[in-house]
Length: 253
Picture 1: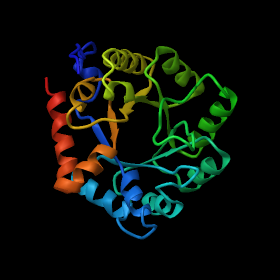
Picture 2: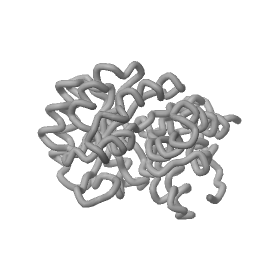
Picture 3: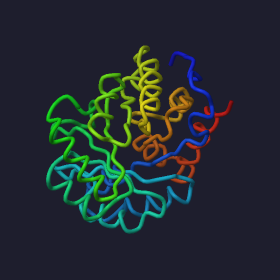
Picture 4: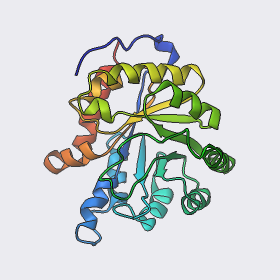
């Protein structure tokens, strides 16, 4: 990946410690291959917390391809750090979130035919519904976030809609687009400047996380697939620890 100056903001303008949230979806993917009980994503979440994760993320998809309703119920009860629920903006999902009250809800786009989330939420469509959904979640005491592409217009619109945070889609960067890192830096700085909490995620690995982790405006990374994949070889605790070390090394002055 190309290098780029990620120090455009003063160090004091963003936290030096960058939060690491582990997405446990793909632990459930392995379980659902046999429709059995193992491996348990809730147990995986506990191990990730023991290894130093600052939070746990799970995406309850409408087709329930990996995480199931019971997983979300248990995660909401048993996560000891904080729980970030990813979901589409549907009445069913909003009602579930309002009942369970996770620490954070991240609204994401969802298409049933996609293998994984392919891009950011289109915040120019259904804006009244987006605004209402964000307000309902916030009224329930839930921190709200929108998963968006790193574009200035999407950042500004997220603030106008009432989101507390944005999660920048890092997929283009992870797939080697040389322009994507500059876009992430710009979008992150813009989000922080207008009062948004800035997160990032998608496709990040130990090998490519450094330049993204070095962006001071980004307070939180959501990482799942690469950690679950690495855990097959070194175990979940070490996979989390490896990512934590890579992130911390990138944040050092």
